[in-house]
Length: 61
Length: 138
Image 1 (cartoon, helix red, strand yellow):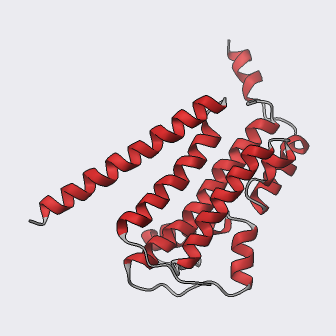
Image 2 (cartoon, each protein chain N blue to C red; image 1 turned 180 degrees about the horizontal axis):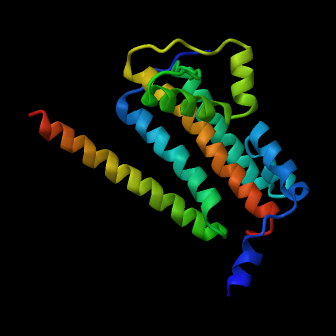
């Protein structure tokens, strides 16, 4: 099995993408709502990712 | 009102949902395919499998149940349950010896979390299959 070396951002991005897809599929009742919820969840992950990233960067200056 | 609530919460017969939930555990997305939702089943199967395989490729470690203080039990038993919920993916990787020792490094750490999260997402898929089989969801 090949080994993957990902940065924090790449790993977090993949994590957010895959979790958002599953949350979108299992949560809502029709396809449009599923798509909207998946995009919403992914956006929340990204906001948290960049927000915490900046927080840690500023905290270590 | 109370009677209506009781009627709504009455559990469906086990034969109605057990095959879908059991297949959903063994093969991620399999429960949805059994319930004639092949598109959603395929999407769940591909996503959960991809998450598990990425975890293996990052050399994530599999949890083994351990006893000791409360935090050790919580992390290791909980992690083991999370890993085992991936079904055939976990069983195959354990049988074929893909389990890695716990190593330092952020990539290995992400890999371990990917492996556990694949199992946790499969639990969500199994709950969804249960709700569909029980007629609580389309």
